[in-house]
Length: 382
Image 1 (spheres, one colour):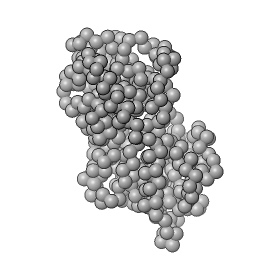
Image 2 (image 1 turned 120 degrees about the horizontal axis):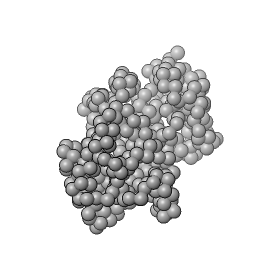
Image 3 (image 1 turned 45 degrees about the horizontal axis):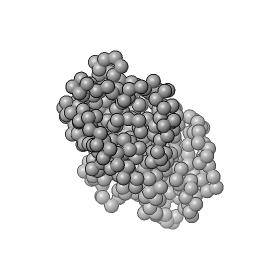
Image 4 (image 1 turned 30 degrees about the horizontal axis):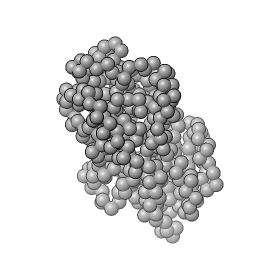
C-alpha cells in the first residue's frame, strides 16, 4: 500500500497539532512494514531526518506560512498529485481532506471546536473548518480522533456512526519520561531569569486556554496564601488576548513571567521545575500539556472540560470551570501540601507512561488497514 500524507501544516515552531503530526511521522518512518509513504511537506520543512527508504518527503513549491496558497493546494491540487504519484490511500492528519479525492482515506480530527465553540477560534479558522470539517468527516473512510470525548462530540453534533470513528490517544515523548538533570533545570531557570518557585501554564495564547481567569485565580491565591511563587506563561501565537493583557497588568509587577515559545528541548526541564501545571481550559480535544507535565512528575490542576478528565484520570486536581476563586483555593491548597504534590507526582507518572507515540502510530496503522484498499473500486477524480 502506498500511503500519501498531507504534511503541509509542518512549518515554523510546532504547537499541539503540528507536534502530533510530526511525532506520528517519526514513528511511521520507522515502520519497516509492507507500506510505503509519500509525505507532502512545505518547502521550509526542516526535518530531513525523517527521509529514508520507503518514506519519501515530497517538498511543495511554497512555504507553510503561505496560508492561502497552502489551503488552495490542499483543496484543489493534492488529489491530482497523489493520484499521479500512485497513492492508494490518502491521510489528512490536520483535519482536512481534498474534496475531490474519491479513494480510501483517513482523516485525523483533533476536535470540532470550530463547530461547537466558534467564538474560541479565529474568524478565518472558524469559517474554514466549519465549511470543511463536516464534509471531510463524511468523506473519510475512517476518522481518527484523540479521545472518547471528541468521538462523542462528533457523534452528537454530526450524527456520524460510531464505527467510523477510531480513538488513537496522543503520546508523550520519551524526553518527558526521563529524569531532568539539575544542570538542565538550572540552565532553563537562568535563561528565563527564574529565581522564585513557580506555577506554569503551557500553550498558545488563545481564548480556549482561559488564561485571563487563570491569572485572576493565581493572583487571588498569591494574595490569600502569601505565596512566593510566580506564574510562568509559556506559549506563543497570542490573539484575541486583550483580556489576558489586562489580567497580567492587574496582577502587578513580578507576578507573571511570559517566556514566549519554549523550544521542545527545554520543555521537560520547565515542567519538572514547576510546582504544578495550571490548565484551566474551556475545551480540549486531548490536552498534551497535562500529559507532558504528569510524565515529568509535575502535579496538574486542570478543568473538567473536553477530554481533560479522560486524559488525567485520578492523577490530577480537577476544578470545574466557574469562579476563579475555586481555582485559587486549589492552587493555595496544593502549594501548602507537599505530601499531596508528591502523591500527584507518582500518580501522574504512572498515568502518563502508557501514552506513547508508538501506540498512537499503531492505532493509526490499524485505521489504515480498516480503511482498506481495493484498486478496482475507485478513482480519485480529475
